[in-house]
Image 1 (cartoon, rainbow, N blue to C red):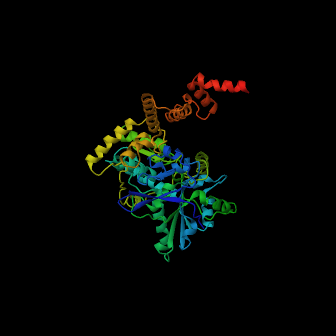
Image 2 (image 1 turned 90 degrees about the vertical axis):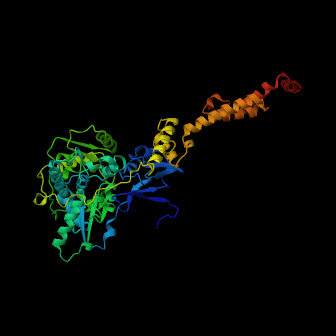
Image 3 (image 1 turned 135 degrees about the horizontal axis):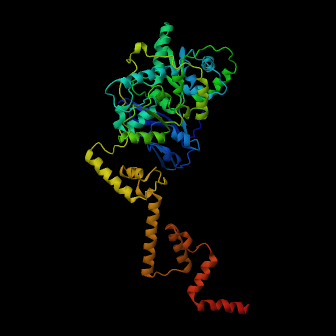
Length: 504
């Protein structure tokens, strides 16, 4: 039973994908664990996070499910939401779609067959490798690039984070995306069709196709597919959550029941450069890590990358092996994959009859531009002007103490009525300093009578508020205050003390 005192927020989006239902994000924020630090807001690539009321808040319209906030949160306040295998017990036939990144999670595995057989031992009826579909997509990409008229460079559409990032921050680059379904979707469609052909007694509703995901973005993809109205995948499991189940089964497998049907090209998709190198073309660029991805997209958006045919972008460091739902270090996992693919053929899967039909997008992804200030152009321009003015009035150090990632982000929040200028601690400091000097000047002008102790306490407070506590006398030291009073009182006030000492 859930603890009733535990407050959690399930992040649900309010931006559109293809004009369809609102996107269900795969991130959950546990407010009880959030300390309100600004670590996550500094790493979010779309500035989707703010710290308000002592804890993080995610702006749904900007979230792209990259998982960076999960990765950098030292308090584990952000977690990925994914499906459980037990949720699909009612289905008569279950098909596993293992991501290529799964193979790099296990130590001392000599062949892929052992891992695939362990999936069957865990309760799956069939296994279809996503790496098989990746080889088909690679061939599709080679043929697509041969077609005349396609803009350059073409950007890979395999990573859902990249598609959403482009849709939110670089909408003019949407037409550069490769209009082909992701390998996960191609694999699901082929696996489902093969199962129906192999088992005529089954209906489409009897089959559950489950993807073993390395990242939360692909979990979100299953619920909100890109490039198609409805995904052929029923659910997404976490590789990390399923890891120990597989490990326990693998120990007892001596004769594998499943034979791998992937080559070097398909397995290589797990790491950065795997997709691009399969094009057999040296005019490509492969980048990983969300910060590097943004730099590359900036260059493409500015028209500085024209000589390349293809750009492969992966949000996670190292590629899919770097997803937050994995177990192993991404670079160790990548090294293991190099060993596993050593004796594999180049490729075992091809396009059927060499045709491109059946693998292209059903619909083009459509996003509501997150940075849109207003539907009215004049109002948007007025707001933009005001944002620039407020940004120039702010310190410009992007410290994050206000709860926004940058001073410009705070200015935008102010214009949109989500924050106020006084949220900036440096602005507050300047206001208090101005108050201090104004009050001090007023006291000197009016000559108001105060005891030494009162003046001392008042001055200490105002100096501390103005940010100069070291220059102020310590109002909490009674001896200093008494001495100050005695000096102001003059020699007449000291005489009784001396007399009292003599009388003693």
